[in-house]
Image 1 (tube, rainbow, N blue to C red):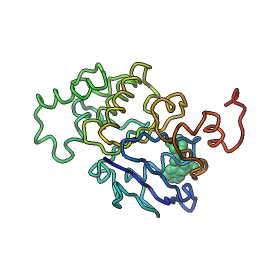
Image 2 (image 1 turned 60 degrees about the vertical axis):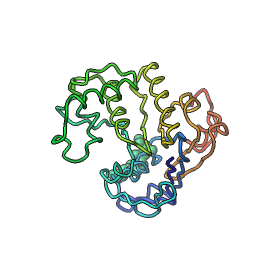
Image 3 (image 1 turned 135 degrees about the vertical axis):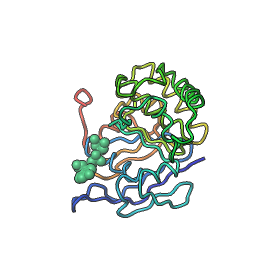
Length: 246
Ligand code: ADP
Ligand code: MG
Ligand code: MG
């Protein structure tokens, strides 16, 4: 089981502070929905977790042990997998190569056995009910298929902590259902999931915990059952909002 804690995280860019003492905790096997308006600091916080941005001050701990994450590669070695909105598939590669890339972080080409790779890729895609040719070029896939390849890539490694930034933005409702099924399987294995989304109905369905950010600060945190949709919106924007306009 994997518990993630980020404690008192501050971050500035050229003297402009964007995160103010942010705390985040995901108990093992829980899904934390991370919410906030554009610019609230969600991606910055996740990029610190992924080693894309340096940690200015504060601590990151996995199962209570403090970890240093200086690079995305180090994040992967700690079992952290972040799926960004901007898909970062490798150009001119097949689905197999993308899905298995994280499983063979070093010299993977040298040990590559296509038969094993193909069946492993089919297995992972099957979990997602994704009907995608393992030998297709990722560049030729549609946006939903590319998104599924990204998700499959994260599932192909033993992720302890999985971050998904609006993973269902390009998915059909069936694909979303399958994704939720897989997320529930991961939860049973003790994986901690951070789920960034604006879709409140999805959050009610899949999240255990809610965290709301506003202007670089955490303004709400707790069990999803304690947050009504209108309360979430109020916290996100920092004032009462007419639901018809929200
Ligand atoms: P969110 O993901 O919640 O929309 P972001 O984390 O992307 O918010 O952005 C939070 C703030 O940090 C914004 O004001 C954004 O302009 C700023 N920011 C993010 N990354 C950088 C960067 N690399 N350089 C300068 N400012 C940045
Ligand atoms: Mg944004
Ligand atoms: Mg963002």
